[in-house]
Length: 246
Image 1 (spheres, helix red, strand yellow):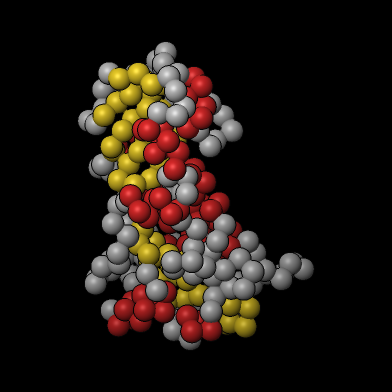
Image 2: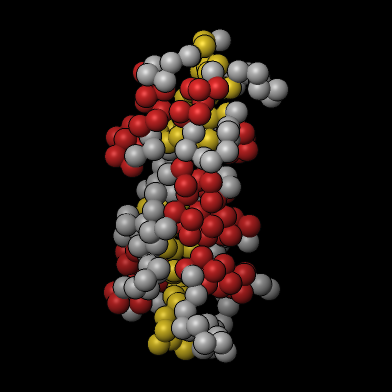
């Protein structure tokens, strides 16, 4: 097993470059931090290129890819998290192109820019049994370090696709889906639930675009309090739970 002691080692520099969206797109790879996320990726079938293991880590084991021992200083240089990590990895990013057919509940995110919100919604969709998540190109990258941490590995459990949202909504409507979006001017009555439901969550400040809203049933969540709206992740989580409830 190789051992790296320098932060300027080319493999370390390449891994660090994957913090930036530009290099994730160019290489088709992303960077994973932490024992849990590395093992979630591995068990889900994600292809790992290199695993970096901190020297002295009690969980040292063989991985089906290049495995490298690194010193404490090198691991700290790799990590973007506030707490020390023992495992990090470079992984191949799954295909993000939307397919022609859908199955199960679908969550769509339009221009949701906060990585924490995107990760939380992917995690909620996973927990509640959704079939897929579709993101607009302007959303936070689902494979950025912050989004990965917020999703807690759920990004590896269900398909996550990137697509033009109006085009995705038209495809869902053609396949018999009931597409629902949150809207301040919407109805406070939910449409009848079916086996084909799709929920659209919009941008944190501006909500859904007019083009996307025109392709959905507009719904306003009843709120007896004085707050005008909810955080995108909170709204999306409440709605996913409600739509998935039998």
